[in-house]
Image: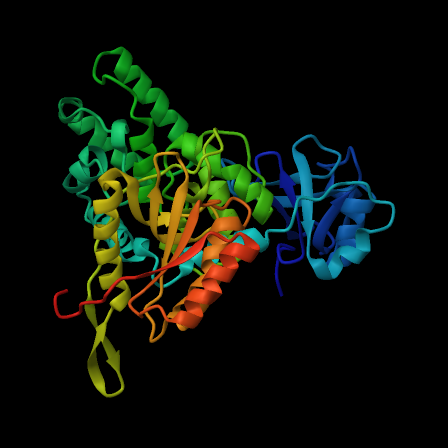
Length: 465
C-alpha cells in the first residue's frame, strides 16, 4: 500500500513543485493515515483527523479547505514535510486523478492545475522527435551519452580534472553547444583549479540553490578580475552534464524560457519562477510524470531542444538554418538468419537532391532535415529570395503513384498544420518515373484545388553512392 497519495492527488505550489500528502502515525494513540488539520491548527496534530481514505482526503482538502501534512517533491525544499492547503499563498492549485474528479465537482471554484498530459499538438511533436530516422539520434545521442559516461566515471574515480576541458573549454561537448557562451581559454586556464573545484561542488550538490551560490561566487571572481565574464551557460551545462537525472540539455536560459510556454499550453506544465536550474528541474520532473519517455533519460533531456528548434521566433518566423549532413547509403541489420546488408535509397536520393538544389539556389538557401514548425522535419527545404519556402518530401518507391500517396500526408501537415511552413511550392521526390495518370492527378490538384504540388524524379544511383 502506498504511503503517499501521489497517484491520486497532490497540491502544486507556486514554484511548480508537488506537495504530496503523506501518511503518518500519531505520537500517541497509534492513529495512522493522512493528517488533516483545521485552518489555523497546522502545527497541532492533536486537533487533526487521520484517514487512510484518499477520497476523504480529497474532499477535506479541496472542498472543506482544510490543511494536510504533505511532502515537498522538487526544488530547494525537496523532502520537507509541512502543513499546506488551498487557502495558503504558497499553493497555486492541485491535481486529482481523472477517476476521482467526480468528488470535487460540486460547488468547487478552485481552478486545478492541468493534468500532466500531452495534447494533440504535443503528441505530434513527440512522434516526430521519437521517429527512428530522427538524425539527432544518429549524430547527437551517442555523443551525449558518451559525455555523460565520461563525466560520471571521472567523478566516481575522484578525478574531476580529467574532464576539465570537456566541461569548461569545449564549445560543443554534446550536452550543449555553448557558442558565444564559452569562456576564453586564457580565463579557463587561469581559473583551472577553482573550476575543477566547481565540478566537485556540483557533484556533491546539484540543487538549484547551489546553482545560485555558484553564480554569486563567479560574480565575485569576475569583480576580482579572475574571470572576464560570468559563464552562466557553461555553469548550467555543467549541472546538466553532472546531474542528467535532474536537468535537460536546453541550458541557455533564454531558449528555455522560449519553450516553457509551449509546455504549459500543450502538456499541463506549470512553470515556476526562479533561476535556470529551478525551471529546468521542474520541466524534467514534469516530463517524467507525463510518462512519455518510459525512463529514457537522454531522449527526455533532448526533447525540449527539439521543441525549441520547431518554434517560431519573436517575429513569427521559423528560423532557417541551411546545411546538410550526408547519411550512409548502406548499413547492416541483424536478423534470425544473421547479418544482412540494407540499402538506404532515401539517403542516396537526399544527397543527390541537395546537390541539385544547391546548384539551382545556392548553398545558403538549402537545408535538409529542417524543422517544419509542426513537429516534423523536411527532407529538404529551400528558402527563396522572396523569403518563402519550397518543401521537398522524399519517397523511394516502385511507382510515382505510390510515392505521391506516401508523401501527400506529410507535405500537407508540414505545410498547413498550425505553425506550418505555408510554402510557395511542395514537391514529391522519388526515383520512380512520373507516369501520365499521376501527372494528370497532380495537375488537377493544382488547377482545381490551388495546391502548389509537383513531382521531381531524382535517380537513385546505389552503385555510385
